[in-house]
Structure formats: C-alpha cells, structure tokens
Image 1 (spheres, one colour):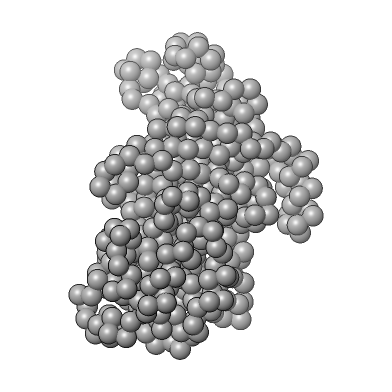
Image 2 (cartoon, rainbow, N blue to C red):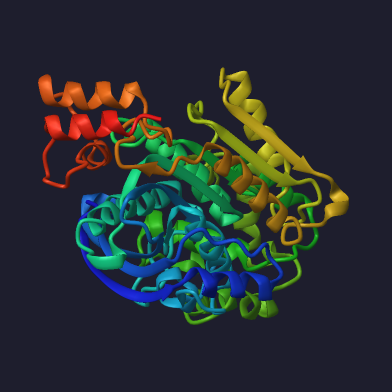
Length: 437
C-alpha cells in the first residue's frame, strides 16, 4: 500500500499571488515560497486487506535546494463529494483547504490533504469517525507523496526531510489523533511524528459523546448523529445492512440517499428532527441506553481513542464553549494519557466567551501552527540531521555513510549528495565540510 497511481497538476502560485490573496482575505500576507498543487491517487489497504484507491491534494513550496517537512492536515466534516480536497482544489468550494494551503505551503511545508476513504468517490461511503480508516488514508498518502517527489521535474521538483507534523480540527481533530495512535502503535519503524495537534475532536466516543447525546434535548448539527451511525453500520455489518432494524421507517428509507455524497450537511440538518436521536427506533434507543453490549456501544468503544499512551509531542486544543463536540473529550483524553504515564501531552482550553465549535476553530489552528513552526526545520543540502544547520554532526553522518555504508533515510541521501551524482563520495564529504557555519 502507498503506491502512487496517478497525479494531476492543479495550479501554481507565485509569492505575489499568495500575498495578494492572503491580504485580500484579511490574513498576514506572508509567503516565503511560490507553490504548486497536485491531486493524486494512491493505493491503500481497505477493510479485509484488499487494495483500494484513495485520493488527496498536496501543496508544496518551490525550492530545488531545500528539503521541507511534511504536514498532514486532516480536514473537518464533509459529506458532499465536491468538498473533497482533491476535487475542490484551491477554490471556495472548500475554503478550509484554500486557507490552510496558502498559510502552510508558502511557509515551507509539503502540505497533504487526504480526502479520506469514500469522500469524493460516488461509489463508496465515507467511514466517518472510524479510526483505522484515517490511519490508512494518511500513512499511504505520505508514502505516495514521497514517491511523487521522484516523478516531478523542473520547478515542481520538491524534497521532503524527516519531519512529520499532524494537525486537524473537528473530524480532522479525531482523525489526527487516530492517525497518531495508528502510527505510534503500528508504523513507528517507518514514521516518527515531530508534533501532533488534535483539535476539538470526539476522542471519547463511548463516554463523553454518548452521555452528551443521551442528556440533551436538541443538537446544533443533527446530521452528525446519522452520519456516525450509518457509517458504523455500513462499515461493520456491510452495505446490505437493513436500516429498518435500527431506524424509524422514514429514516430507514431516506438515510442511504442523504449520505450518497450529493448532499451538504445543512441540507440534511434541515430535514432532521430537533433531537437527532428521534430517528432511532424506541426499543433500539432503550437498549442502546441500558445495554453496554449493544452494537453501537461496541463500535463506539472500538473507536474511542484513549487506549494508548502518546509518545510524540501532542498538543490538544478545545474551546470550553464548544456546543457540538464537548470539551470534555479533550480534558478526559489529557487526564487519561497523563495518568497512564504520558509526559509529552499538553492541553489548551479556550474560555467559553470565545464562542462555540466554529468560532474558536481559527484560534486553535493558528495556535497549533505556531507550535509547529517553532519545531520546523527547512533543510539545505548538507543538513543530514535536519536541524536547519550544517555542522560537524552532518560531516560525521556522511563519513559513516561512505566508510561504513550505514543506513540513511531517503532525505539523508539527498542531503548528502551535494554534487548531484546519486552517490556519497569524498567530494560530497568535502563539500559538506566546506559548508559548516
């Protein structure tokens, strides 16, 4: 999995283009690099081990002599296929992707926007809030983008270093934590996460989220409930599952078409009852309320993200006034991680007066970007240890490569090949030594 299948150039922007757009939108007009944007298709491992095709968008800076960190941005909730990053591109069809691209890629990040499984594909459903699907999407997109870097030529050549950042809000916050968990538990021999910033995600599905929905008479975004429930039914019971076993007749007939990728969340909200749990059959809801072994209880528990100890630097962000994803998700996650021995987790809660789920999003994201930028390394040729400087340590690494044939990452091979002859030699050693500051 992770094989690059296809790629298409979407757009190129100069520094002046980016500065003007950011200025016009009211953001700090800073762009250190021009950027190119591609959509890609790549292989992934689907449920049961079969090979599937996923898609995503990547934006990267222009500089043939520097290597950049990979930043995977997990987008927020989307139900319409047209909102998939690879289809929307840098347009107002997905303002979130447009803004994040123009803030991050021109600042020296290779920014990935995985579509997620099913989104953007009219023949598939999106497994909403199912942890393993996000891990497959991101891990295999990172692999595919690394392969893309060997395919492109001219000003679209780019090089990655060994840094990997994860960030996302709402569904993207859940996805970010799910990917971090998946990488640390299953792919730590391949990837090291530099920093992870999960924001406003429903990490405590089986606890906080269940208690919240069973205690409130109404909900601001009612379509989230059937989005989760239909996804879990399709994912765990198959797409021929009988919705009539779980939902009121009208909703059993209607839900499949509402989540076929042609509708927007607001459209679905307009049809939903004030209390989204009213779409569930009363006896099913009663059993769900009282039986810890109910199907939905089991799948929600399976996708609750509290059963591991984060090892990477992890920065949780949430607004106390969040009326869609209660902040207790972040508080309980933080408390659980720390009590289990995590020593690299930080929690930032924003006061209630700053607003709800949507209002505090920009504040969270820019706080996360500040943390990431403090750790960012843009690596010139010769910087084998990716600390943005060329020192004796870099000379030692290339010397070991020449004398002892030590294993190096793809980035370290690129960084040490100063004479561009696809090998490490005494000439490269001398050139790196000459670059020491």
